Length: 479
Image (cartoon, rainbow, N blue to C red; front, side):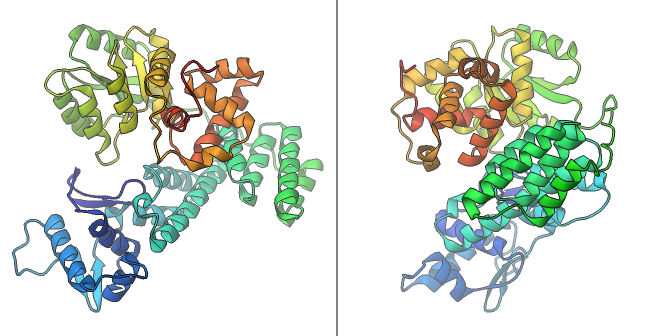
């Protein structure tokens, strides 16, 4: 089946394999038609929006050439004179013909706007948020139409986060939601719904004082930023809490064994049978884990991922036939890829660095105790990362100074207390160790890390490490 992804790296896929869409501007033609949602885009609009203010004299023929090559990529089996069925002519321009479920952005929007019972809304928002693999349309950010659409999709993403939380509160899941809502309200302090949800979640946990304190924080931010008091809705909520007029908090649901999301399926890939056997025994002995399969080399790992669709892949960085680094790149380039945690004994720093750049969720040493390997799997599945401190220290020493012009510019605007946490994350410290170092509660450190990820537009702890030393924030030997 032909599918398109725009919620992250822009790509078209045929039965899960990426298609060659050509160069940047040719890809932009397809992206612009995707943004139109199936409606026709006139050729003159494509020209004006692809070459803002300065289209070349041969722009029309160039667009026609782009469309012709894209058609060949999307429908390679179409006869030369057969009418196109995907990228179609729709005078005075072109349109993308696809079903909603074939385009992640279209599917996402449909899910966000769907309705139903709290359980149905929870499931729909969970599915919608799971479609995101990174910032939308980031490679076309310099084009105004892409920036506008990316902003619209990001607003829908925030609505999905809030709708999911609202449904979760109705289902009695306040306890599990508070940490995420703290991070959400901190990252988007001018969103009324973020503060409402956080306050209600805290109240339903029996933490009335913390709920009122959250609303006081919102009031302070709004006065500083907007010169306004809380909205009428938040003032009513505050009054209801003071008068204890809110409904009794529902009981937290008890998860049933084997419930969806309760078991993490892990694929183990290592060329040593003894290592695979040991990891299988570890997974079998721990509740909440199951082995999805195993592989003895990189090629087998890629095939096994396609066949078993695991949640997490434990992947040895050095294997025969196709090494772990190359396998990781191909696995992570797939459609809706699993998380990848690399295993290493003494892998070269060059390989470790390259794997981080490829998007792995972290590293563990093969000599690590089982609890650390299991923690890495859990962290990766939750969208976080765990990198062995010894590996992190080596990477910083080897690669500080390789500045990356694409590192997040917002890093320079972070307050000192956030930078202190980021430096310690970059040095491989856990949240508990950071809390002990800075005299902060471990939970507060977790919230700061989540707010850093949101503020910088990053998606896991490994990327925070990369941003810290590529920007020069961390240098070898610094304390």
